[in-house]
Structure formats: C-alpha cells, structure tokens
Image (cartoon, rainbow, N blue to C red):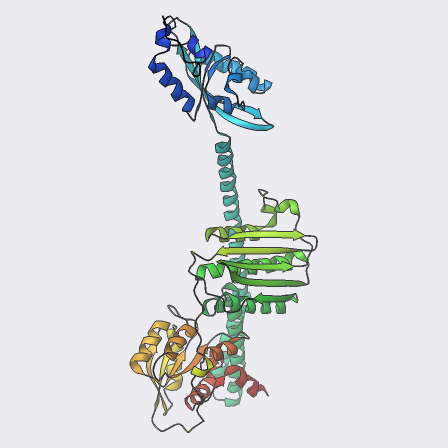
Length: 537
C-alpha cells in the first residue's frame, strides 16, 4: 500500500505528473521529492515547468509573483501567454518551439496593475523517463535593473555633455581673459615702456623727465588696479583670509556697483570656517546665481542668505524676476537648455556631498545650496583678541637713534627685494630678516624678536591674519603693519579687528611705506585709506 500523503502538504498535480518515477507512488513521496519541492518554493528566482505549447504545469510562489498573481494555484493550469501582451505571442511561440530542442534566453514584458515589468526568461528542454518533453522556465524580474542601467547611460551621456559645455565655457573665459590682457593691459604696458624710454631720453631736461615719469606712475597704478580686479574675479582673496561670509559681502557690494541691481545680504555672525574647497564651491554657487539674475531674470533686486545651523550650511540667492519654466525644473528633465551654470553648480555640490534646489514662480526664483557640515571639517572662526587684551596705544615719542629692526614677510621675492632697497638708505631702520610664508613669519618673529613685522596678507601655509593672531599671542609681541595689494572696502575694518597697527597698500609703497613704518614704530596707527584721503584733501 502506498503511504498516504499528509493533507497539509499535497504535491502540485502537475509536478506529480512529471515526478522522477511516475509509476511508483512511493518514490513520488520520497524524502528527495519533498526536499526538492521545499527548495523550489523558497527560491527567490521564479521557476516553472511548461508544456510544449506554453501551459504552466508547475510554478513556484516567486514565478507566480513575477506574473503578478498572488495565488500560485491560479497560475498552474493557465497558459503563459495570458500574462503577456498579444503582440509578443508570436515571439513566445517561437521561443517555446526552440526551447524544446535547446536552451534559449530572452526577455518578455508583462503588465501588472497598469505597470509594465521586464522579465528575463531562460527556457530549456526537460526530458521525462516516459519519453515526454517539457520546458523548464527560470524567470527573474529585471525592471529596476534595466531602469537603473538606462539612468546610468543617461547620466553618463549627461556628464559627457556637461563636461563638453564646461570645457567650452572654460575656453571662452580664457579667451576673454587673454583678449583683455592683450587689448588692454598689454597695450598699456607698451605705452608704459615707450614713456619710460622717453623719460630716459630726457634726462638732461629734469622737468620733462619728471612729467613723463609721473604719467608712467599713474599708468602703472592703473595697470595694477586692472590686474587686481581680474584676480579678484578669478578668486576673491577674502575667501581665504576671512571666510565665506566676508567674501560674499564683498562680492555682493561689487556686483551691485557693476550691475545696478540692489543686493541685500543676510549673513549670520561668527560663522565657522569650512575647508577651502567647500567655501569655494558655495561661493561659486552664489556667483553663478547672481550672474543668472543679471542675464535672465530681469529682477531689480537680489537677496543672499548664509547660515550654518543644525549641522548644515545653507546659502540661498533669491530674486524677483520672471522665473524659470517649471517643466524645465521638473525632476529627471534635461537641463541642457539652462546652460552650463545650473548643471555645473549641481555637479560641484554633488562632488562634496551637497545638494542644489531651485524653486521658481512667476514672481521670482530661489536657488538653495545645502551642505552637511559633519564630515567637512567645520571649525570655529579665528579668535580675535578682546579689546581688553589689545595692546594699549602709547603716546607718540621720538624715535631713538638706535636702529629699529623689521621683519619682512612676503611670499614674493621681488616684493621683499623692493622693500629692502627702499629701507636700505634709512639710518634708523634695518631689516633683520625675511619670511616667505605665514608659518615662517611666526617662527622668525619668535627667533629674531623684531620691533615690527611687515606682513603680507596672502601667503602660503598661513595667511597674514592667521600669522598676526599667532604673533599677538607671544610675550611682548612686536608691532604689525599689513603690507598688501588688496583694497576692498572692509579691509581697514578687518585690520582693526585683527588688532594690527595699520596697513599700507603696495601700490602706494613709495608714498606711504616709510611713513607707515615710522608712525607705527612711534606707537601710532597708520591706514592707507586715511593717508589717501589726507593726500587728496
């Protein structure tokens, strides 16, 4: 007597029909058959057995699920073509006919609850001991895989397009800079050279030579201003020295003057410093957003906001212009039509873990860049000495006959050589040492103990303000006179906040450097802006 099958574990009728030993029910109920059934049911891959004409003789739960049928029993006994579109029936029939002879692979599309799914199907012959041939089917859904692959292809194509446009934009910018250098600065240098030659030829006429040299000095200052402006646009020095907030305030002020677009700034106080790369990225987002306001929005105003709160840095630019078409800004839409700017901003932020959002209506556009701070090395702003710790101003006294010692810290050898030449003939002043960067300036100040440090602002390894802070912490610190090319409006305020004793612009060195050195050594203060006002009064 064959063993009675437990009522709670009946084998599918179709599977019993094709059991390894159809004539022996005992073999059908063997442990091996039950283990095989359990394995098939637990597979994450769809498995089925089909007749030659596509009738589903057996299907595991996963196969039924791929076809969109929750009840496995409903699938068994139906035809597989019932689950695919009629347009694919001919292809399915051809695949079934071929699968009787040899394995074949392909894909089919099925519609489940209005959604098209892609199923990868592997078909092959199965030969029974009674001589019958059925078709084994292994199915796996690849809808998400195909979708992801297509997105990667689209992303790669978009990246290539963005890279090409970035290179084109870079070439155009280089071409513009080259044209300005050649057509403006180059021509002015040529005129300067001619004028100097004319002065040399008129050395026997001091009055004429003096007039020509005065014109040369004015032209040289003009060239210096143009080069400084160009360098500021390429990379604002405040970004390195004082951080993102100060750089944005400076840029907003200059943008307003150049374009007549009123720019408001809302910048939180005492912002922590980010890494140079992160601050540059956020600055470029604001720069590009303001450029878009000028080029596209038609807005008479713009507003810049910057805050760092709850572990996130957030910078936004708002305008009151005509806005951007919502369809263009929809997720997944190609933004090629928006130019390289928005795509470039998004790519810059993506590389440092940030995001870019654009909200636009008929009443204006808001661009918001956010950057998590946890992994970006945010640190507190450089400490400033309280006013109570600032060195008290001493009443002016006459400079003693003994020579006062000066340390010159500047990363440009030509500048250091020029300062040394200017001071060489002064009987009351001597240069006791030179430093090529901020760290060396601090070290040599400790070693040489000068009376005054002439300190450049932009230097490698440590900027001028960072070096000044370290020098101020020393016992009996020397006087500090900033010597810089910069001329932004908040420079004097920054120098005072750093408790330095004044600053001299390099372009005015011949007029102000000796005056500034002597004023500071006498216990006073010296600021080029005040000197310039006094000179023109």
